[in-house]
Amino acid sequence: MVKQNKQYAILGLGIFGSTIAKTLSNANCEVIAIDKDIESVQRLADCVTSAVKGDITDIEVLRNAGVGECDIAVVAVGSHLEESIMAVFNVRELGVPFVVAKAKNKRYMEVLKKVGAHKVVRPEKEMGVVTAKSLLNDNIIERIAFDNDYSVIEINTPKIWVNKTLINLNLRDQYGINILGIRRPDEKMNVTPSPDYILHADDHIVLIAESENLEKLNILFK
Image (cartoon, rainbow, N blue to C red; front, side):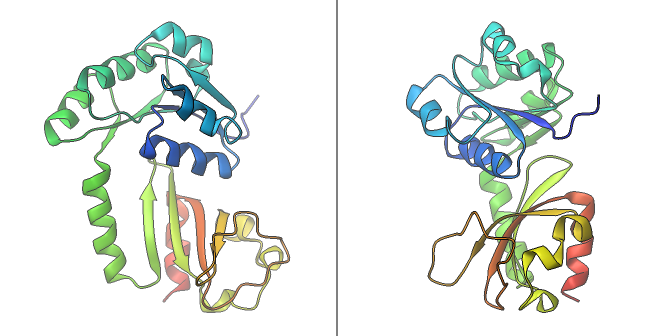
């Protein structure tokens, strides 16, 4: 049987890990979130498929949590190299096909790649690049790439979408994207917009899209 949605394991629930877990969960992905801090786990308990208190360096904890069944694992701890190494080694040992790891510097990146991480990210550095790109393109406000397949993007409303409803735009079928939220000026993010919501010219749209579909969005702004 073909799985309908990818399954993700997020190991470490600091700001970086929690943000990834919530974003993927809002996109209807199955998410297993693990951290040794019970408060961090409890904060995400209602947001994700499974929230587990445990040591990510213990392979049995990961095995019992179902990490071995996931398509992608994100090792979201970056300050302690030994912990990251053990977590990467464990998820590879469990057969997870794609592993993303967080690193705090270039040396950590090199080590984590050598022990099996397929992709290593430095959030602080990458946010600098994202910010620079956003300054060059007024329409794409922010972009965060989570793996080789998906990116979360905040965009201005394209002119051809203005005054149209979400249901009429049929964004999932037309562009392969899912809306995570809509932000109006001086208002909180609406994370549950109605299908009948009418887009305004000054709306900011937060969406998740497969990377291969991003070019479709770029065309809208040309």
